[in-house]
Amino acid sequence: MNKTAVYPGSFDPVTNGHIDIINRGLRIFDKIIIAIGSNPTKSALFTVEERMDMIRNLIGDNQRLEVDSYEGLLVDYLIDVKASVILRGLRAMSDFEYEFQLALMNRRLDRQVETAFLMTGSKWFYCNSRIIKEAAALGGSVRGMVPDEVLRRLKEKFPQLQDANGRRRRSS
Ligand code: ADP
Image (cartoon, rainbow, N blue to C red; front, side):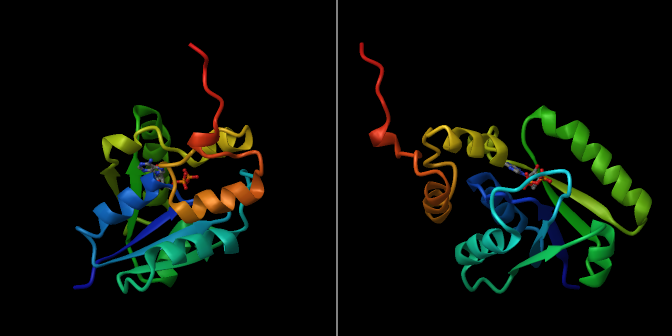
């Protein structure tokens, strides 16, 4: 049986931490649908189209990965794509409480749905889209935390963003 998981999130923008979870997920699932949800409580930096475009460029022609977007309840989207597993990534303990509540709510909404959590690689423990955007907006280098294409797009949004070589150095 083909096991498909839906990896939902804002991906605003996609980071190396997200990619780490996708690569780990591919060891377990036959197919992963990366699904961008429009979260009305969050204001986004990139449009859903821009976010999908960045992820599409990253995954290339890998037949086991698909990018999509959805509106409304995630459990309804899962029915549409005939999937019953939600893939989520766990970073530091701070993720746990929220992820636990979300998983229980989704299970309550649809008893057929299971959430699978994968632990991020230690390198990406503190890699988080919001912090990356905040640093980039203030001109701090985020090289190494996001794929090159995402870095380029962040530089378009924040011209003040320099790379590590251009950063001011503390005089000793
Ligand atoms: P959300 O806005 O719902 O948190 P995100 O785009 O931030 O969506 O993240 C989607 C999923 O990816 C979540 O399960 C989140 O915990 C996970 N994730 C994000 N960054 C990382 C990371 N550095 N390592 C592991 N998982 C991550």
